[in-house]
Image (cartoon, rainbow, N blue to C red):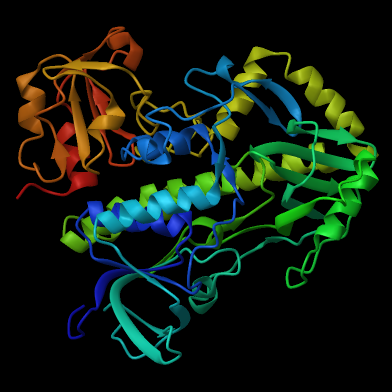
Length: 512
């Protein structure tokens, strides 16, 4: 920030999963980061329970899975659903219905410990108040914050990222539109005790609505109650356990009023997406960029992936290895993914939560999921494994995974989790990405490939990736060399160095 002393490189507003993931990513890339969070302490509430298959891979790429206390492999379920139509997700290679039963409070604790270990400055009880004027155009950002002592201070940084939820103050202060559809239906969720319930892990349609029930721990159940025709709730109104218990009894006929709740809340089917994920030096991620019906744990998971996409790019800009061209790819890549997320959650809401008028759609979905092609398509949407970014500029990457351009078929897709055999024994692409660098996989012991990647040892790891997939190069669509970005997506793949230098410069900057 020329002419203005910066307090840090990046200010992140919001210490939920998205903000904490972003803080860790920035620190891995060498950027200084201050996270401000208005809550004085984590809520510890369970809220989102788990994450999608792709979000699980993203955590694996940073070595975070063991921090969840279950080793390298978290409990997953092969059975999932789309709008209540249940099917086996393993019809799609590498797919499952995601990590199950992990309270959001646990995910936040893991990410906060990780970001803190890396040196992130996390300030709880600090509240974003406003953007301030007075900086030269393009010179950085300055915000006013309220400290835990109640006084106001200014913080200056090169970049600001709003990870502060659906009511984002950062988004409003930046003047970014948030178009979409208003809420038309209200629903409840609660963690209850003192009752015994029949598990309804993927939800069950009954006369009058949909209910879900799953055990969280000994004696604690998570329930979701979606009454047909229930009007949207005022988010400022306090929801009581008695209200939730009444809605549960209306739908199921079961009386749970003798129990209690450690936490109750409500949600709606409001659906909105920020018109821009970037405005100059201000960015949006997570719920600040998109809100939707919570279906299949996709909200938390999409926010984590927003952070994984943005963090290494912002860090590169701070280091001087990137310019606006790289930063612009954040909106270009993630906005279509967000739009597709809103489409699929709205569709699921119409099918699963609609009243009797949706019965024909439910019958049709039950027929369609008998076909493997349909199951693969729907599993790809909900697991987020179908994402393909347009990294070639040929228009093939629209978030659907259906591109048919001339680039290698791996380009723009996430690197599949194949076992690799190297000089140090077995490894995986995820393990090679733990440091947040790019990775060049040389699968044919080709010196020309390694020479092309020389000159960026601080950004691209090449020395430890001489390897062959155990099931042969055909497992990677014939590629004998693959360049993987820090977020796990393939930037280039081929059988010779052609195009490699261009890809390295585009994504990792020139040699020094």
